[in-house]
Image (cartoon, rainbow, N blue to C red; front, side):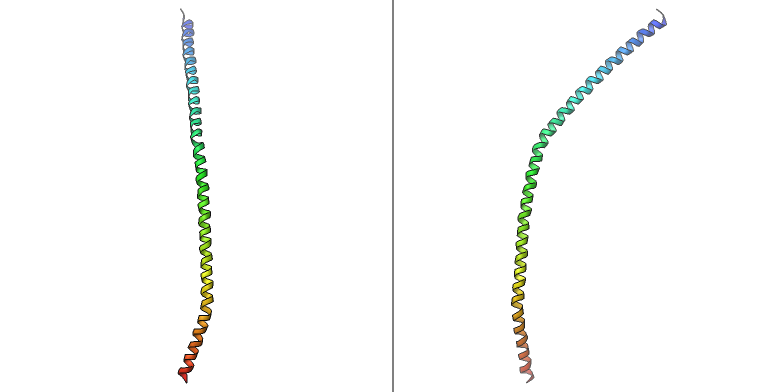
Length: 110
């Protein structure tokens, strides 16, 4: 056997080993891709109900915010009514107090 024949055998063996390694790498890649697809599907199955629950929670929070807004609006209306009532009462009372003060000064000055 000459060197060229041995080199052919060695190169053929290396080519076979590389081909087997490539096939193994393809198999590992396909397995990883399948596992990744299964993981994505599991996550999707878990996220859909979670997103639905989040949507319901956001709707409930919006409803509560609308209720609080109505309460604050009513409190503002009550505050405005109290302010108007106090202005209505204060005006005649102040006028009467001023008249009494003027009368008291007039009586004292006599």
